[in-house]
Amino acid sequence: MRTGYGVETVRAAERALMARLPEGALMQRAAAGLAAACNGLLGRTYGARVVLLVGSGDNGGDALYAGARLARRGAGVTAVLLAPERAHEGGLTALRAAGGRTVVAPGAVVEGVAEPVGGIIARADLVVDGIVGIGGKGGLRPAAVELADLVREAGVPVVAVDLPSGVEAETGEVAGVAVRADATVTFGTYKPGLLIDPAREYAGAVRLIDIGLGPHLPGGALDAAGTGSDGSGTGRGRSDDGSGKGPSPSPAVEALQHGDVARLLPRPDAESDKYRRGVVGVVAGSARYPGAAVLAVAGALRSGAGAVRYAGPGADTVIARYPETLVSAGPPRKAGRVQAWVVGPGLGDEQDARQAVAEVLDSDVPLLVDADGLRLMDLDAVRARTAPTVLTPHAGEASALLGVPREQVEGARLASVRDLAARTASTVLLKGSTTLVADPDSSVPVRVNATGTGWLATAGTGDVLSGLIGGLLAAGLPARDAASAGAYVHGLAGRLAPDPPSATNVAGALRHAWHDITT
Ligand SMILES: NC(=O)C1=CN([C@@H]2O[C@H](COP(=O)(O)OP(=O)(O)OC[C@H]3O[C@@H](n4cnc5c(N)ncnc54)[C@H](OP(=O)(O)O)[C@@H]3O)[C@@H](O)[C@H]2O)[C@@H](O)CC1
Ligand SMILES: [K+]
Image (tube, rainbow, N blue to C red; front, side, top):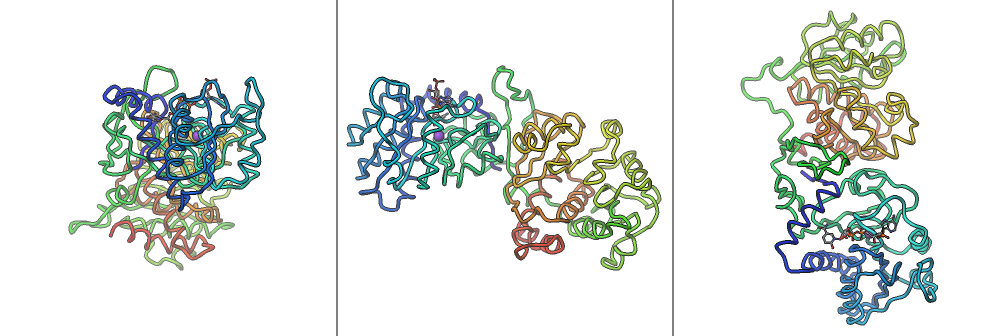
């Protein structure tokens, strides 16, 4: 499991660790990791030109100490200071002692003359962004924006210290200009912003440096270095709700890894019959969109469920393509016993569709609602359900449900998915390049899926995902596990399918993804 903690939690862990270490030791660990990463990226450090962008906090301190290490290995290091009189003193001394030089950033509010740094940046072999880290508030200030613009125009490689400056550590939101990094070297634990779009796109390749913070994070998260979690992620308690009441006892976000998904996916035992393995019912497709029925069934058939029932107007098309499906052309209530329902893909708007959605909402088995089902469902009926409900909107559908513009959902994905889960009392999977899964209980970490690819934004792939997750629900997985494991397998299938993948190919590749994960 990969976990991301909020800023207050990181700071509390940092304080606990610092109390046991000599002054400055933590920053030295961070700087050593940062310098090693820079050495790796430079290939040859001796003679390389390195430019440090240095803000007034410890993020700038990390950059200065790392710069000193690079200077000692023969790099020509120039620090551009945004606040010369407040830059980290020890770091400045170390850099100068190692032969590095400092210049004042244009736009810095200081006495004296700012030097034209555009040329220095343009000639750099590497820029180290230490403008601001987890102490950042709001969008970058004008002097920092000016530096970020110079770096972008220069097109030189950038390593961000802890976070790309200008992105929100806590949420993954980006208010205005932020530094675009090729790589980010982060300390102690991932921050939500490094895992969630749009901020994630600014971070480039993220490298986590273990500075010993793990045991001081809630739950003694030994996986802070990306290894060894028990995968349970069950820390429950007060949420980090920004109320200032202290850190949350669980991570804010977590991302399943191969091993976690392997443990979650159902495996049949010798005793399994179809009902034990779970029967999933699919209510999808219409005379106008019969393909949605076929694709949702295709996903369900590769979910490990014992059997797939299909109920609706696509029965003939489905049986022709997948003879193993148990089909009926009537309404869901007459389809027979199921352990979970999937409703929505390609249903259209007809009265029958509306009625079918109402019927499955009324059932007492787990239910996944997607696509047209999200428009046709009655919210009160959703909230009144006693069995788990999973909603799988993309940003446009989520914006309609929340009554906000689509851009707002895309810019604030974490807040949006949490809000929707709370309002609907459902588990919500918000699709996107990083898919998020939130439980209605806000103290439960939001799951982030990173296996997806841009190619998956293709007609019909969502139908496959619905069927897959529905099958996992029928097999007995809890809603959050079914949704996040389903997203993981589906994303991997998107990568394994031939480019550019069609939904049919993605469905076909589910088998390979499943095999890849479980063997
Ligand atoms: N946690 C750990 O375990 C470890 C943490 N470490 C490192 O410490 C970093 C945190 O350091 P930090 O607390 O000093 O805050 P930091 O990110 O440097 O920013 C504060 C400064 O930025 C300024 N500023 C604020 N907003 C701004 C904006 N929008 N645009 C521009 N400027 C803005 C703000 O200015 P002020 O408001 O004071 O005028 C203030 O001076 C952390 O990210 C990591 O790198 C490692 O060394 C060791 C292990
Ligand atoms: K930074």
